[in-house]
Image: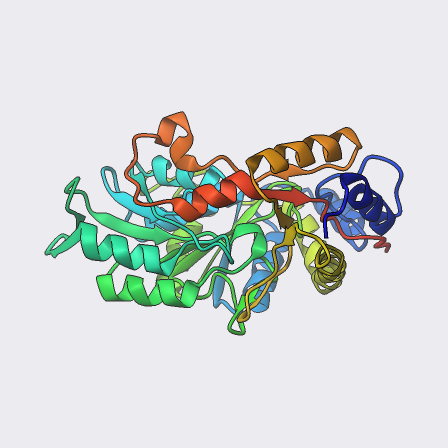
Amino acid sequence: MNMTHQEIIAFIRDLYHSAEFIPLHEPKFVGNEKAYVLDCINSTFVSSVGKYVDRFEQMMAEYTGAKYAVATVNGTAALHIALKLVGVNQGDEVITQPLSFIATCNAISYCGAQPVFIDVDRDTLGMSPDSLRSFLTDCTTQSSAGCLNKTTGRRISAVVPMHTFGLPCRVDEIAIVCMEFGIPLIEDAAESLGSYYQGKHTGTFSKLAAFSFNGNKTITTGGGGMIITDDAVLAKRARHITTTAKQPHPYEFVHDEIGYNYRMPNINAALGCAQMENLPRLLANKRSIASAYATFFSASSIVFVEESAQAQSNYWLNALILEDQQAREIFLKELNEAGVMSRPIWRLMNELTMYSGCQSIDLTNAKWIEERVINIPSSPIGMKG
């Protein structure tokens, strides 16, 4: 059955009970946000030291099942530090997916490394373990220096899949491939707080993982990120180098290496603590929205992207697959002109000027997805304190 765009717009307006502009994803502050921020202001501890930073880290560790969590100023910073911690260096290469937000590749570039692009799966929109195995088998060789790219001679120092829109990729299979080839795995879990694969939270399949709390995420700290890990040594080092590598001392300023001013401010963490308290409500609300979309589009030729059989998605951004690129462009234009915000999926990273020279293998699925996928309104509905 082919639904008209007007019928789809009417459904979304009815779902959101709004005749006004409907954003793609807006934050909800329905708990202790104001109280905690005011308490933080009154304490005068508004920068990177304070009780809310400690509490937010503890809440994230407990929620995800990780042993340690380290709060950062944003998700890009979290990923940058995670890459450094596993030894990504100048001149290295990092295997990732071209279908991602640009922060993934930018963090790789901050290390002086280059991304190598492999394909994704159409059902998860995330890295394909089959494509990963194919590249490593055909295009790399093992040496005393590690896994080397046959074409460039460079060391492959990490693999970074991304859980697109909160839809878990086949990360268990990716982890197995990484282990076989001796390459560290880092999950870009920026979008997937509240998502699980085979009963485990995303980010816990790898040595380190990075989350984001940007203003449009499932929960927000305004700007913020988090590194999670089970490794005590890596967690300690993450905390050290994100705090300008300052040695502990009551008043002396001694720094023992080049560090980064990446620690999350206490005032942002205050927001995060309040948001975490309401995370179960937010996730239940968003899953009900996804269910409504899935039911509605089941009678349409437009495909609503659902979680895979072994996954539980947070449905951060709901996604549709249109028939082709032309249908996508028409659909985007009509929804946005009607005040129902929608957007295309990202331009493939290998098509951007700064990454166009990076090596890639067959990207058939990624290109197919880029031409057809859009996001539609995904904000929680009707939540009040």
